[in-house]
Each structure stands twice: as structure tokens, then as C-alpha cells.
Length: 90
Image 1 (cartoon, rainbow, N blue to C red):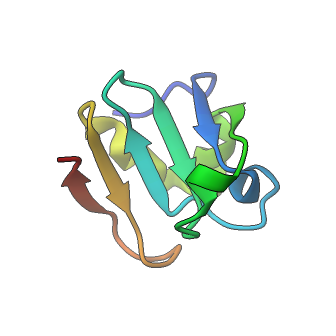
Image 2: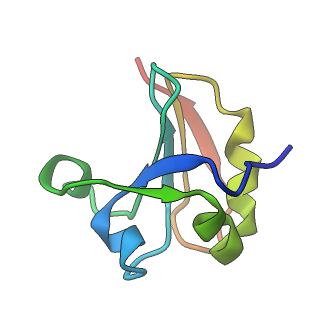
């Protein structure tokens, strides 16, 4: 399964400005999608941008693997070429 290229997701400024790849994917409890760089402080200290997920999947097709995430779960990579590791929020 793949994301619809026009589906809206939130990204941090580093991903939006192509300063960092998306290394964390979150599907929040409401079902919204968020993608962040690997800066732990970024989600709390930055303003998210709404983009079409097609911009992300064009740069990293493995983001399509995250369509399996259920609300309240996440995936992360240690670097751009690593495999996704999955988890759930407590």
C-alpha cells in the first residue's frame, strides 16, 4: 500500500527546507501524520508545515512502508539508509 501523493502531512522545518531527511514518522492518536528530522527538540520548538506526502515519498520511497502504522504509533530510522523501526506510544 502507498500514500496518495496529495495526502497532507505535517513536517518539521528541517524536513520542509530539505536540510534533513524524514527520520521519524508519527501517526498520532487522531490519525494525523507527522514527519520529523532526528533533532529531539524539533517537535516542541518549531512550527510544523503542511505538505503533500508525495514530496517525501519522492525523496524516500520507503516512507510508503509506514502506511501500516495505526493511530498512536511511530517509526524511526537511525540514518537515511537504515530500516524503519516501529513502536507504539504508551
